[in-house]
Image (cartoon, rainbow, N blue to C red; front, side, top):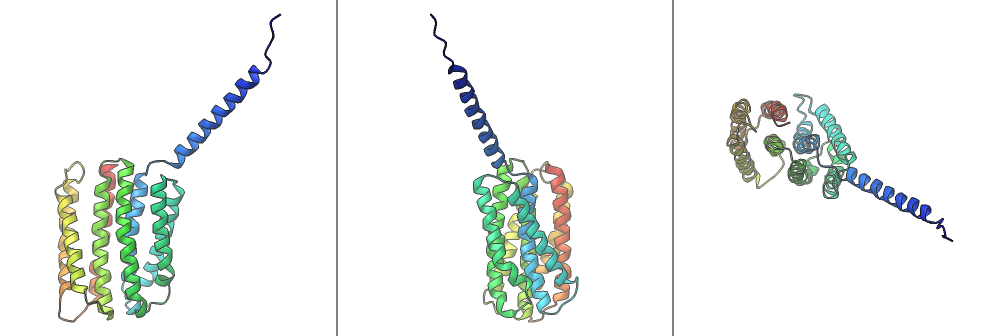
Length: 269
């Protein structure tokens, strides 16, 4: 008599369940390791710019300069950074990228309470060091996100954002000097900003027009003229400072870069 094995269907059901669980785990893991999007690149690149802009506004509030309402801008831009960090964390990227995003969050949370408090000259040097560390690390991570996105042209988006960051970095240095913050390396730092700006600018101007269009290049030329004027102001050794004019110029460059970024995003995406 043939013996029937009643356990075989149970075994198959069990194997099927294990395979289903394995596939579910794979899909969940795949979702958790999604590639970076263009939005991720843009938000990280924006954090680089906004961090230096906030430092500039901190000094303006400390000097009691009200042009463009720097106190309101400071609070608004701090909220933008918090929102961007929250967005980036919620996108659940690869572990390396997630770790880098959390690194930026830690750096930002260390300085945010100081930046939102009543400006104090005694804190300015420390804040400057913290913002420098964050913005430069932020640049590197934005480029990591651009590479991970595998979108041709996202590297150029990061480069344009870096121009914005360097212009606001120059503004922050100028405002610190105008406020009377002692910095023996001030003129060396101004020259460093100029060198970095020019390096990025020439890289963008040499790019294929499929990635950086003729229209964008023309706008970059106009913005560079404003940057050169600002660099002349910042390099002056006359001992006279005009924070209101500097703020006007810095904001003009910032908004021009924002417009160029918009064009670049439309081109590469």
